[in-house]
Image (cartoon, rainbow, N blue to C red):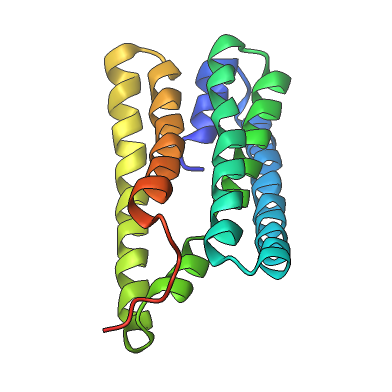
Length: 173
């Protein structure tokens, strides 16, 4: 969210006021996506009994939807950009089951520590992403590769789930 208003001004030529309003729309879609992702996860768990499928399905569907953000590189229409980013933020919301997975996987006596580490890593990414995006935009003169950088994280999240997590089950130590 830190870079999006600047993106709307620089990429789509919106006014500061328009960018402020335009930023709120994808944020609302992101909130809705979080609810949909939770409902999808709970429904899948009830129907299948599989934590891995219940957590993985929203991750893959959500990040798959979020990849639509790359299409914003091919338009400067503010309405199209806000629409595409609304879809992307919705998808990110659907996939946002990190805290749920922490509570599923972390050893019972280390849930707080595990959650703290998870939160720290999230905070570091929240600090680094706008800096890296600023560097990329400064170096290239365009947001195109910065958007690709963000989209690549969707692919990375999908790969991490498939290759690293593989199975959701509590770690016992």
